[in-house]
Amino acid sequence: MKDDGQHKQRIALITGGASGIGFAIAKEFVRNNIFTIIISRDPAKLQKAKDELGASCEVISFDLTKFERVPELIERVQSQFGSIDILVNNAGINMKKDFCEVSNEDFQTILQTNVTSVFVISREVVKGMIEKGRGSIINISSMAAQYGIPKVIAYTASKAAIDGMTKAMAVELSPKGIRVNAIAPGFIATDMSAKALNSDSERKHKVLSRTPLGYLGDPSDIAAAALFLGSDSSKYITGVILPVDGGNSIGF
Ligand code: NDP
Image 1 (cartoon, rainbow, N blue to C red):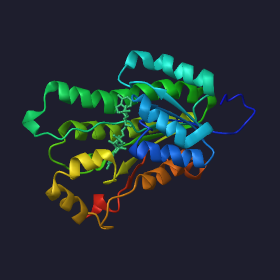
Image 2: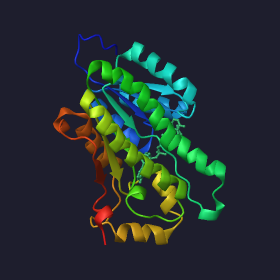
Image 3: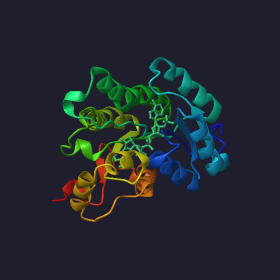
């Protein structure tokens, strides 16, 4: 979908959009006539997403931690499909380990995927957004940045960094027409949360007991918020970290 000024279809890039929350966002965007490009590492997952989402979706197999190749990737995406209106930094990995068991490599791996890659891809996409004088960036944060959760030290550090980056990007980029916000999902039913909760019934009980709505969220709950933050309905909103969490962040 080449953005040649002849059409008004917006173009979104979603990292990690072939599964879980990212896929729900992609589905919602396509349903709302947004041409959606998905990046993830797994070609089979990408093909499945493409088969389900159809002609308004393109998929690219790419490892976002190959930082030096990101500028070329974004150039290629923009010359093929047009400049990006909405960037959703959703790709992320988690690791549940006791504090003293986390190696330097473990810590670095999480930070490189969850933080450095968000910075690198945002920098490259922002260059095109500045030229157009508009854009919306949505970072996916976590409850781990709102309060302390044991056994996820690197993940917590990464999501706290995302919140800080969201605010710093918002103040620097909003004057250039680029809004930057984050969504802080509560506990959402995906493979990632299943890994963390299904083998740990005590943790699952704790999660549900401090979630006033009393159930896990659905990926589509996050998708609805992303659609709002990506659209002009939120044109006066920038720099917020929006909890979509059934009240978990304010639960007793
Ligand atoms: P998933 O594991 O389903 O999605 C994460 C996606 O990121 C995968 O599709 C994966 O695709 C992609 N990804 C990971 N590393 C890379 C990489 N190096 N390059 C490209 N793509 C990559 O998990 P969720 O949908 O649950 O999580 C999505 C986001 O939401 C994450 O940022 C997570 O931290 C956040 N979140 C989730 C919560 C939940 O309860 N589920 C709660 C709070 C936050 P592939 O393996 O194919 O590369």
